[in-house]
Image (cartoon, rainbow, N blue to C red; front, top):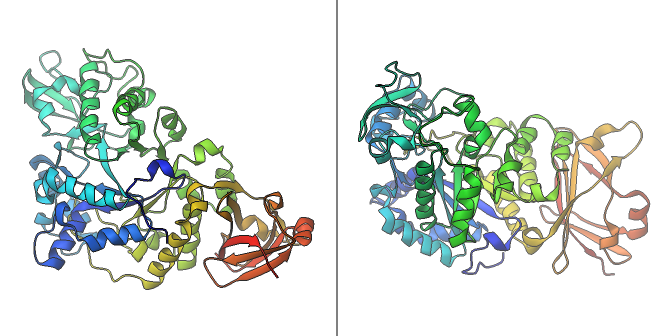
Length: 513
């Protein structure tokens, strides 16, 4: 495996690999194992070396920011929450509940995690390994006990009860510097409001300026941000969520899209700073046009889990500008563990091979590579013990080793066409096949039978990119080695007969007699 340099490689690769880490859980487990407090500042070097050896380009530390007493209290006492926690952690206790990391009281690193000094130390140690640091930015709302709520109620969707004393739905009352106010909870229009949050108003000129200034401070602490529920701040989405005119406020004088202004402002000072959008509802392209480098690809996730190869292949026909800025995943903290939702390991492995070998960013969730089956509620600091699945671990080690290569890092990707192996054999439709090429480093062929039963097909290869009369196909994920005559491949393509969820990742080169 290639050794990392001290240069961060986000801007130097078309196919970065990011690992999401639950900060609370990680530090709790490291502390328990060491018998002493482990913070961000003294995470063992061996763990950082492991991340580097796996080819990780960026670590997303989920949950580093300070949460307040209100959020912790609501997370522990809200009806039914402890029962929900105990489904994931049978012995969960109130002291295990730290509140939602997405109800941010203040954008400072929690003291128990080592504070800003600990984060700076970790960032430097990661950078020495070429690994960037990614943190969360929650643009839609703050915690209810964020200092802005009392000091600057005008930053929020709010109402003065002296104008209208009727308590609005989905709001809380708070005494502010301008008197008592009703402040709206943050919400997604598809779900009930989040009662531990207060809804920001990006149409307010003063609020927008403060939000962008806060984002600038975060940008000084890391190399990129993952922006939570980014589509909620799109103007049309915000207006639909808060009424036809966006629940107008006195300071609604900001114009243009928030994200375009925010990203342009930050990148004037930090042109290499990375923006990742959690995005749904087919708004990914819009957010990419506003400057996001990567946007969540929930469509690929859904099609891999529920729709099959034809739907996946159709999705991968999107233009390359979109593909290269898509973030592919099988897990994150909002989704169930893939080892739980996909009933067989071959299916898991095939799905993992797809997300790892298509263009864009690959997001891995800590525990995914050990085959963990229990999703941890984000409010908890602790998780149930699970022994690692050694077959899953070995597969991911092999897969990550394969894709940590210049062909996948910097090469060009092409979706290949396929044909039936014989008349009335429709199993070819279950295949996915594509080609990676880098002029300096060679060629790769990926072939996956994305179905639970065996299948056969012919794959049309881009022979104009290859030289030689005899071609060698060496499987990097197994022991297969095929030598084929160029003339036969030109006539019919390359024949494959694979078992259910079988896969190959071939190194392709001229064969020498």
